[in-house]
Every structure is written in structure tokens, then in C-alpha cells.
Image 1 (spheres, rainbow, N blue to C red):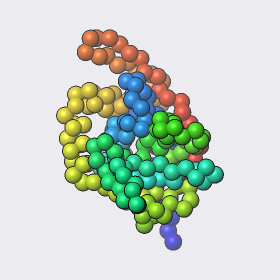
Image 2 (tube, rainbow, N blue to C red):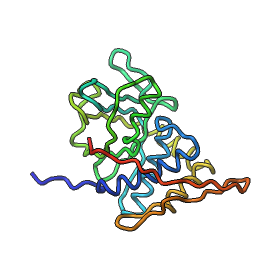
Image 3 (cartoon, rainbow, N blue to C red):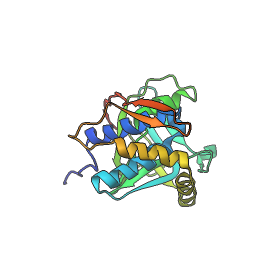
Image 4 (tube, rainbow, N blue to C red):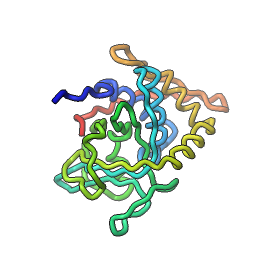
Length: 214
């Protein structure tokens, strides 16, 4: 069986993550609440720099992260009796590209889970999974890296419209687009951002390293 070629290399995935993470952190966004920014901008970077057709998708998401502690992350509004839903208050955003699901927030799942009281150490890894590997349901996540995604098309349209209508979000996105360079080109170690009051903030490029991939 021919091995599936990943959408982007670990090196370029890491570069996209580090740029978006740096800009998001500069305005105090929490990783668990900033999935829209990470993945909408990530999709734009894939299209502009890699000529890939990439689409941000919103919906319910479930990923098994750590077998020793039986840790899973879920983004949904209800888990009563095995049922779930996604809405504006409970959802996740990921990128769909060439039959792959990509999540540019995966290296900071640790911070997202810490916000809800999880004390286990979650490895910083890349999430880039072919849809053929997706579990049949959110109840069948048996090993690390198993995942289940359920798109919400109406929610996706609504939140993409909200994002594109936000001057703050699109301004921050433009900084990411300006900063990112595809390997092997060098990226600037820091970038200056000017706000409406003409105040300058210097953003340093994140040095966070990934330990592998799920």
C-alpha cells in the first residue's frame, strides 16, 4: 500500500504554528479559545505559501491524547448518554486539506486542558491525520492519536463570517501572513505591531519545539 504523502512537513507545520502562536499570545488569547484564529490563519498560510486548497471547519471534535492517563480532549456542548452537539459556545476549529485534518492548536492542547483542571503533561505534537484513519465514532478512541470530527456546516459559515468581519482578527491575521516564510527561508526572530494608538509592541517568535506527531 502506497504511503500517503503528508500535506506539509513537520518543519513547515512547526513554522506555521510558531508564527500564529506568537501573534495570538501577544494579545492574550488562550489556546483553547483561539482555535478559530490558529486554524483560519493556518488555512490561509497553506493556500498562499503551499498552493493547497485548505478549508477551516467548525464542529465537534474528540482526540485521545495520552494513554497512561487515559486523557482525551472533547469540544462539544453535551456528552449525555453518548450524545453531543456543537454550537457557538462549544466547538472546535480544524483545517481540512487534501483529505487530511490538521489542527494547528495541537501543540498547546496542554494549556487548553489546564484551563479545565487537567494536571497531566500532554506532549506537544503535530496533529495532521488522514481522514481514512478517523474512528467511526467518538466512543471508539482506543489509542493515542485516535480522533473523531463532526463538522457543523452552518456554524462554520457563521463563524467564518464573524471572523472576516472583525478588523482586529483580520489585522492580526495579516501580521501572520507577513511574518511567515516557508523553509528553508529564514523567519525574522521578532516583528513589530502597531495598534490604533500608534503604540508599538514587539512580538518575539515562539521557540516552542514539537516532540513528534500523533
